Length: 206
Image 1: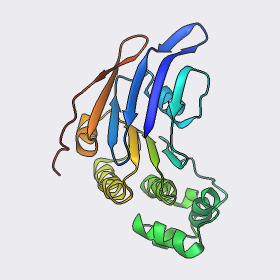
Image 2: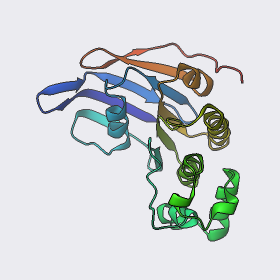
Image 3: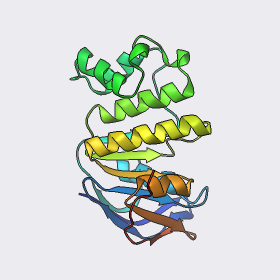
Image 4: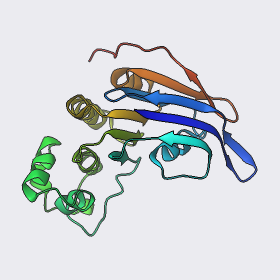
């Protein structure tokens, strides 16, 4: 179980996040919505443990994966090496199988600069799920993609989450993405930002 209890977060003298408390159960997918600049990415970084400068506490499982807005790949390493450097215990065969699962088996030797943005996002997903994670955090994973590629990536992510069943917390600006992937939607609003939770809901049908 991931438990978040943020009592406050400020940048200098400017308060950004107010009291925010919620849980994400194993196998549950929670979407976080809110206007640009309200603090969604800041909250994700706190949940992931990347920003310890806040009031409150977060309890998270040990195996965590973070999919950032940008793929954050090492440009001097191949796709296969980018995958294995995060998971050093992963065999080459298992790494190749993971690349195949996301549809880029033929790009194992390619470098990030030789991949399209969609292929880079597939590699980032492969890296996240190779663990597999107990907690998956995604910060607008489909941003900057054309509609067709975004739909393909959305379907792929949906499949990977269904197979691995991690606790998942993700930020999106697209309500349709949230309604498709999430079991529950949380809304950030106000200054400093606090949550207006929604009731549990059935996912939208494809």
